[in-house]
Each structure stands twice: as C-alpha cells, then as structure tokens.
Image: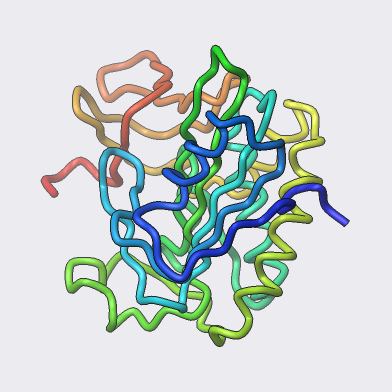
Length: 234
C-alpha cells in the first residue's frame, strides 16, 4: 500500500486543497499527507488561473511531499497521464509542457506545485475531471476541457490508482522519468509561441526545459512560463 495518502483530510468544501495542505505542512504534518475535497471555492491552477469543477464530480487533491524530487511537476504529469491511461485504456493521454494532461487535445487534468524549498517540502495539487459533464463547466472551458466520463462513485478508485502510480513514478531515475514524459509529449514537432517568441517545439532537455527551434534559426530552452500552439493570436 502506498504511504502517500496517509493521513487524509477530506472536506466537503474548502477554498483550496493546496492551501489546506500548505498550512498543514507549515505546522509539521508528515510526508504523504493527503487533502481531498468534493468542492473548492478558490481552486487554483498555473499562471494564476482558477480551477473550476462541479461539486462531487472531479478529483481534487493535494499531497504533501517532504524532500521532493527535482522536476516534480514532470513526475506528477507522468503519474497522472499513466493513471488516466489505466482507467481509460481506449484513450491516449498526452502531456503539454510542463504538466497539463490532455485527452483528445483537451485538458483533463491540471497540476500545481507549491512549497518552500528552504524547508524541503512541496505540496502537489492535482485536479482531474473524473466524472465532470463539460456542459456544467463555465462556457469558456467548453472547447478546452476534457473528462474521463466516469461516474462520481469512481473517484475513490481513481484516487487509489493515482496515489499508487505516483509513488511508483517518484521512484524513477531522472533519465527514466524524462523518457516516460517524452513518450507522451504532445508539443514536439508543433508550432508554439510564448510571450517573447515562437518556433517549433523540439522536446525537453535533461533539466526538463522545453527546447524550441526558433523561427529565425538557433534554439532556446524555456524553463518557466506558458506556451501556446500556433503562431496566431489567441
């Protein structure tokens, strides 16, 4: 049995599972602490976004990790993608750098890592659309969100599978992790753009940075921020 997920705090509603887990970490909670919720009133994603999910239909969780591995967002993305593949074997999940998990070109899971490196802990937050009806999400997400299409009662089995897979993936060497991540890379070979440039995605390097072949020649490696498909507006 995985040591991740013990002890567990489950809440019908909270502002953010990451917020609760961070407070517990600062108070000395142990490695493996799991915070789950049926609903969040202030769920957060990367780049300051909110994370929306109808109550009781998504897996909303945060895990406290003491002495976290480098490249934790990439490790988490592989664990989530492999879990999705195991519960939805007829679909092929991919990863959009650095850690958005996609199904059929749409986002089915988001990952947010927060912590205090100087205190050697991190909180890994995951939102996974297990049983979400896309039509119940805000209108602006209808064209970009995906769902596993399962029943709400299947959230717990999916959670158990995810915790087991996360522990297995966290034991991988960096090279094995990057190999697994690259196998699910949905950006490689595609045109991408970001705040200050554009080019063609060429995979990730040994530090988990996104390598881009620039339009004007040469290469660059992005270690933070956000990229979008295509070179047009939007």
